[in-house]
Length: 238
Image (tube, rainbow, N blue to C red; front, side, top):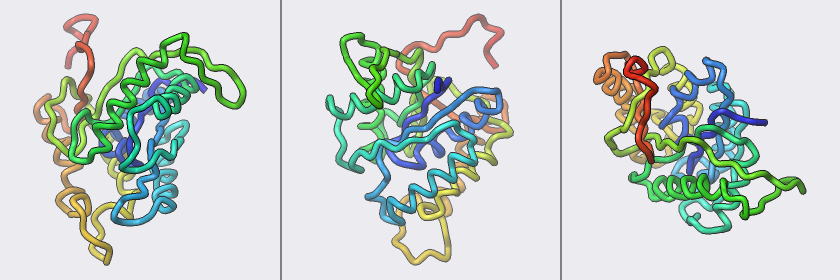
């Protein structure tokens, strides 16, 4: 299956938090989108890997993505080496996306920055003919995405561009809250973490409102890019 967009996240819920509304909008426009989680989030303070598996499946249904896979890398301990790069290359060559979305280049959780660089490096290497990979006994063809964009996570990184996601925040919030083990729940007796506060849950909306305010729309999501943002002409700008 060829996808238009393939979004990678170090943990289940990264993609939803960083780019959930953008993905929902792109799907509404007829784009085929997939998600690949690098780990099962097994080191998360709350819940378990098994619970996160179920939550990730439910979140994928909310967003309407075409496919979701988990590479089963070690949460907290995966590294950017040949072994891990090859597994990501297999995903890129399998789905042949035009655009790849991945973690923030710098963030509070060490896996986010690591995951960002790992996926970015694999996107380049995936286009090299002499790197050979196979899936299910079938040799894969080289493929390099046209664009690699990094969504914004915990830190308020200055975006290189923002996407108007007005009308799609409800879908994003529903997808995020599919991870009920991870976020604000006043009835929970599990330990508190930085993302279990009511403030964090509310920040998902007010951060998008603030970015939207800056471009004159209701909600927006921000991204950074590894190359100059290009437009066909000035009329393509909001």
